[in-house]
Amino acid sequence: MSSLAVCSAGKSGPTLSVDAARLRAIAAACPVSGHETLPLDQAVGRVTATPIMAAHALPPFDNSAMDGYALRLSDLTGEGPWHLPVSVRIAAGDARALTLAEGAAARIFTGAPVPFGADAVVMQEQVSRDGDKISLTNTPRFGQNIRRRGEDVADGAQALAAGLTLTPPRLALLAGCGVASIAVRPLLRVAILSTGDELSEPGSALGPGQIYNSNRVLLRATLSRLPWVELTDLGILPDDPASIRVAIRHAAQTHDVVISSGGVSAGEEDHILDALRLEAAELDVLKVAIRPGKPLTVGRLGQALYFGLPGNPYAAAITFSQIAKPALRRAAGLLEEPDSWLPAVAGFTYSRSTGRREYVPVTWSDRDPFGRPILTRLGQGASASMSPMAQAMGIAVIPPELEVIRPNQPLQVEPLID
Ligand SMILES: Nc1nc2c(c(=O)[nH]1)N[C@H]1C(S)=C(S)[C@@H](COP(=O)(O)OP(=O)(O)OC[C@H]3O[C@@H](n4cnc5c(N)ncnc54)[C@H](O)[C@@H]3O)O[C@H]1N2
Ligand code: MOO
Image (cartoon, rainbow, N blue to C red; front, side, top):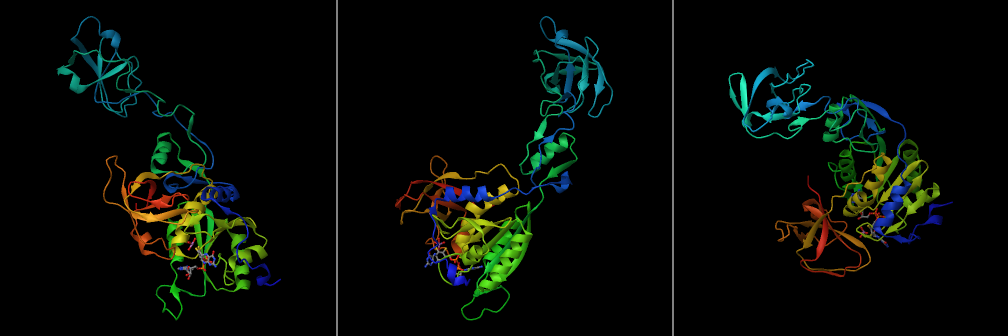
């Protein structure tokens, strides 16, 4: 069968909403199976493969939250001020199993074990000390300034669930619970390839009709920030149906995810879709009501998840962030979805064709009285333009049905620069 026999012109299939396309892409993503065990300091950004149980309670013993004096409330009888002798001195790391003598106070420091029998710690600022005695005037609360054993994480309790990114605070929590190594999901093997006879690499001469390849570095750089991805860059494929078929077949056999850019719209030089069909890919998404990025293709090719991103760089960037990335997260084993959209208002007027959810590069310097950024729109929305996305502080989302955006129109914005 020739590739023209399955020409993709028109891309039959329903136009999906962005949310429906995202859900289909996520549903097509099978989480990578198995796990590897890593020490804490090699696990940042990786995905927990199993629930992680605390090896020790956190904190492991009752300890003082302040530098001060530990005492028994039952010793403070009658009206204050009360006077107590200081019977012992306890610093952090003290290994003795101490009991506080009745009628006495213990000099204690932050992090030091609270002696048995003491039920409050009074800050040194609230005590006057005279030789071996202290005096205090205010009645302490029961348990005041005592961090109880297991109040952060109980003995043997789950410290972290499966399917979470190991952020620095989560790693710190595990260290605190005595966990030294963690079962994490294997890296997600992602292959990227660019298509197009017009593409040349920066650093090479530009021939007639050629442009420099922007999507390759866009995808490489974007994926390099995902610590659970192992990236293979398969370079540029020529617009040749046979070699595209071989390349995507091989990429799908050796990777969990394949991402191409270009060659997914309607022209007969757009070979990706035909190649996918000839390779018997199951295609879940062919057209999306998104601007830019309408001809996004998502499916499964053999065991691999396949994303055919549009060639226009802004369209590739938006379809990656809005649809491919949530599915990649699921394929990596992540179960939490970040929601980084913030409320904002338009500071511009824009008349548009309805029907597609639009992602608009924006910047801002002022905020309205409610603290919402007042957005300035960058560029004219062309999906081939790169200056607006490069200058943008964020991406605003315009609902499909909105025909005219006027100043003060509430919009959501996703901040970009970090
Ligand atoms: N008759 C129609 N034509 C087009 C349609 C349509 O529905 N009917 N859709 C348009 C839309 S919307 C988009 S988006 C593009 C998507 O096109 P493809 O994904 O097939 O991509 P190409 O045709 O290969 O390239 C589009 C554009 O992007 C440039 N490009 C490609 N790769 C790169 C790269 N790696 N770095 C920088 N620039 C790249 C390429 O030269 C083209 O200018 O189709 C519309 N057409
Ligand atoms: O959907 Mo396309 O990205 O507008 O040119």
